[in-house]
Structure formats: structure tokens, C-alpha cells
Length: 134
Image 1: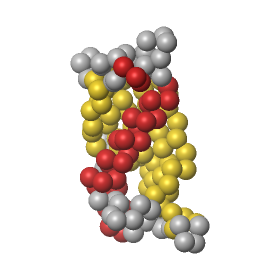
Image 2 (image 1 turned 135 degrees about the horizontal axis):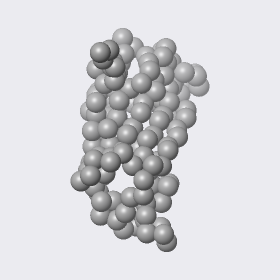
Image 3 (image 1 turned 180 degrees about the horizontal axis):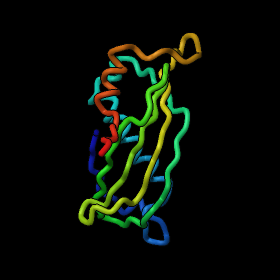
Image 4 (image 1 turned 135 degrees about the vertical axis):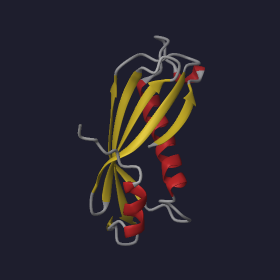
């Protein structure tokens, strides 16, 4: 599991006083980029594109609240992987939003997807959520 913290800035709120829905996607992007860098998935060349993204808004979030974004891999495909990003209000621990993304390794010269290397698969598997049977 990969984790970052985000402090909600005043400019990220709207006329209703809560975080505008667009900003959750910015938080998810920031978390994804840090995930890529910290797991070593990207080097000098950026070779991933975002194929799909969604977010379910569960609770309102306001200026100066601290969010914790926990990211984990749901599924690993041939050239893509699914990333889930759960956003929690730090003080209460409440789940406030759930984001999902499909990320594809892309060959920009050939303009098509490219298979994940074995090393990439291992890096992704280390962040894959496993459900324990009980």
C-alpha cells in the first residue's frame, strides 16, 4: 500500500465551502505520480498513460482538512494495471472518496500499448491488495 497526505487548500473549495469535485482528480494524480516514482516504475522516460479514471464522492471535505490517500493495485494485465485510491479524512479516519484508474504502459513511437516487464510486474505485485480468507 502506498500512502500520501494532502492538506486541503482554500483555493480547492467552491462556493458551497467544500472541496470541488475536480480537485479529487488532482489529488489522485499527485498520488499516482508519487506512486510511480517511489515504486521505480518510471525512469528518465515517462511511459504510462491514463486510460480511465473515476471517483465516488462519499463525504464532504473542507478547507484545511488533512486527507490520507492510500493507493493499491487491484489488477495487473499484460500492458496495464488498475489502481484504487481510497481517500480518508485523517483526523476521523472516515472514507471520504474512492478513486479508480486504469493505467497503460504506452510506446509513444509505435503509438500502441506495450507489455509490462517482469520487473514492473514485481513492483506492482508488491502494492497489490490481497484479501485474506478467514
